[in-house]
Amino acid sequence: MKRGVILFAHGSRDPQWRKPMEAVAARVAAREPDVAARCAYLELTEPDLPTVAADFAGQGLAQVAIVPMFLGAGRHVREDLPALVEGLRTAHPTVDWVLQPPVGEDGRLLDLLATLALDA
Amino acid sequence: MKRGVILFAHGSRDPQWRKPMEAVAARVAAREPDVAARCAYLELTEPDLPTVAADFAGQGLAQVAIVPMFLGAGRHVREDLPALVEGLRTAHPTVDWVLQPPVGEDGRLLDLLATLALDA
Image 1 (cartoon, each protein chain N blue to C red):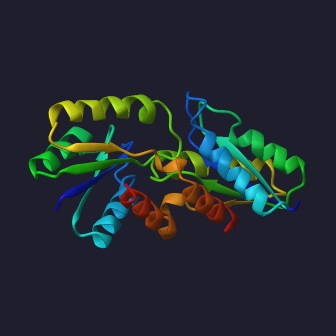
Image 2: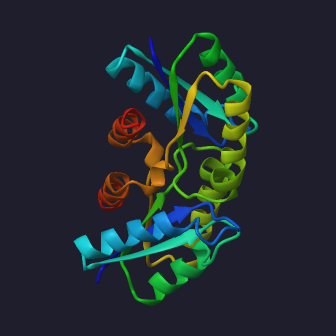
Image 3: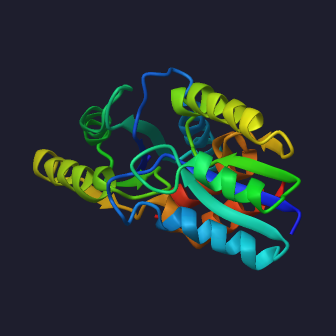
């Protein structure tokens, strides 16, 4: 297991809220058993990003991608997350931390959301 | 134009945040010119849901689908939104208001998010 993926989402007081994020992590793990896949949350839901990152660093993963599970990118994605990732680079310099664009910037996702909107 | 779609999202102080939602509305309109497609926001971003709903009711639309553009469904989707939709049913009883499940419950979306996570 050489590569990791962290699905980074906002978090919520509602315990149901995290279910889709965990479902995506399960799909990633099912498709690519050699990729370590975990969710991490900015607030209100555990675990947080530094905790998952430290686990992955401790496992000796060479590269970890951080995928912002946000449709709209505001302060959380454009300010809070880059600052968190800088902290990971300082704390765990042996890992290549790759911050991906937020999922809401991908044209395939926008196309599928339009399909879902017309499914009514 | 008989049918409407309202893409309902959270909203943000950041003016960039709404761009993906507006991009989905543009895709819906391009694919189905007979469907009226608009975004509406719970807070911090305009227009709000009652405003868009009143516009659509005033246009005489027979049916309007409300699509929650949320990956995780917490209080906003499970409590705030149903209460808002009940208000629309009372205010505009000639329109058939259809509240769709949140996009994060759709298996196609979860599959695509897994693909994006592995694209790194």
